[in-house]
Image (cartoon, rainbow, N blue to C red; front, side, top):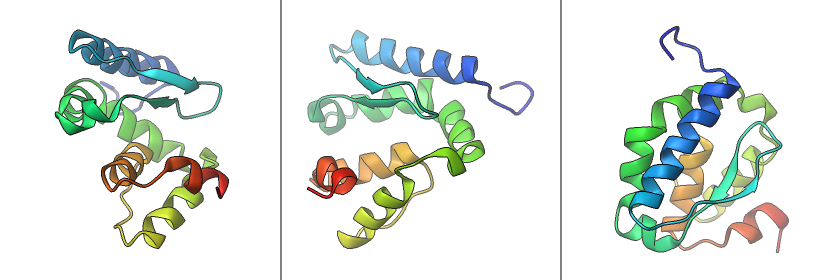
Length: 118
């Protein structure tokens, strides 16, 4: 990120640092899909509840992830679905996908219903 831009290798490296931080605290980060622009991953809600997710994200991945997501926001296929789900649940719509997923998770909203209409 020294040049102000994030390439795919830097994005993946940042994600792996986040994942390692989570593992150090005893949490597994499961990758559901890494074939798209954004790595789709999940962790136990306990990691969010005790602050581990936020701490690891903030220290290891936030700057890289936010830069990557903003640069590639037009390529994210589920962005509109997440935005609609946030609004339907009376929640503010954050800028990045991670913040959107976190807001929905913290509000107890089922992600499956947001992304698959179920």
